Image (cartoon, rainbow, N blue to C red):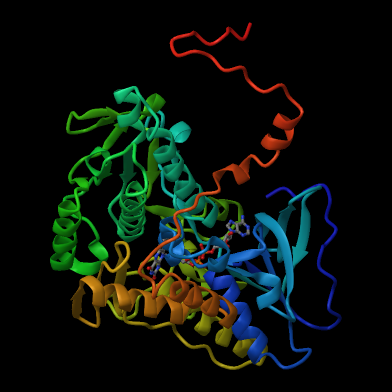
Length: 467
Ligand SMILES: Cc1cc2nc3c(=O)[nH]c(=O)nc-3n(C[C@H](O)[C@H](O)[C@H](O)COP(=O)(O)OP(=O)(O)OC[C@H]3O[C@@H](n4cnc5c(N)ncnc54)[C@H](O)[C@@H]3O)c2cc1C
């Protein structure tokens, strides 16, 4: 790709030390860097992490952030605090030139910069996979970041507050209809946590009754939760339907212009809320890296996690996590590891060990991990799990979900904050129902303080025209 105008490096050169540059500070970036910092001898290499966010997000906890069981800041880990000894660059990778071993980075402000490397790790993750559905880009929100999870929660609680004083039945129905597109574990967990939150919150609203709440899941295939297997997927479907959730299988969202939903089964209704959780695709910025990609846009890597094209490996380039097609050596040839944290965590360990081995001229290890299964939470005290072939339902599955993810959450600080939060919430049996949606409009009160207050109007009096 074309070199940017300004090429000053934001990272001080480390004389004589090879530079390991990690692109993305998510699961792969953070964990690989931590392993490296533990294993490298003093002065053996410089570790640099680039990410537009100064924090790593523990995505498996996003549904609980939306549901109010975990505080949003507790599911993110400060890269600078967690990676003492590494350099952290806050900026977005926009491309690279593997022949020159440079990466082009757009900082938050100013012109693009160039960072050179000896070894580069691609851990750029995945983004929401969308389709050209009329109105989708204007109406929907994804569920991949802590910002999106918090916004979903605040928006839904805001709709309850608004609906509670609505006198127009059609407007009220629209405000209380919540649509989720996609029935994989991320989408179902997010929907179920939010439905649980809404049911609990409605108890405190005198203007809304439970039977006015309408949660709709639109799933293109004939099943939900493929990750827990057919039997547990079917059990989950029945459980969620019993809760009154309208799950439409073999159905697609055709249009959502101005909040008017049209489904492929002919149903039409209005909604203020569309959450898009219908799958992911590899980070599109990979197309600007000059590295070999497969038909799905994933970086092709070997089992030892070196980037590989048809002509052999790309010198000094490595990849892992959702951005990459990592061969699954526990299955027949041609199969790849599914994009999940379970693999990303374990790949990071092998990746760091292989980077250190490369610096020391030692042999490489292949990544091999047999998938241990999935745990999913559907709201407080509810869940499903299928791990090591053991199928668990309800409360025990929910406890397994919490225990596993608390164990896997990086840093002791975050584990303690989340664990204590659960304890304070009455052994985890209540949730926080406050939404501070106004924090996205913090100047509103200050501006209003300097303006004339609006005059009261008798009922039926038309609002004065703005012209
Ligand atoms: C709601 C939800 C629930 C989930 N639940 C589970 C679960 O229960 N179990 C499980 O195993 N997995 C779960 N996952 C999947 C899991 O979180 C991912 O597989 C995992 O995060 C992948 O790690 P990664 O490092 O490849 O990508 P990520 O963790 O997504 O990290 C990618 C990083 O790259 C950064 N980045 C993006 N673009 C750029 C750029 N241009 N330049 C620099 N940096 C960039 C991002 O900011 C991010 O920090 C869930 C995901 C979601 C969304």
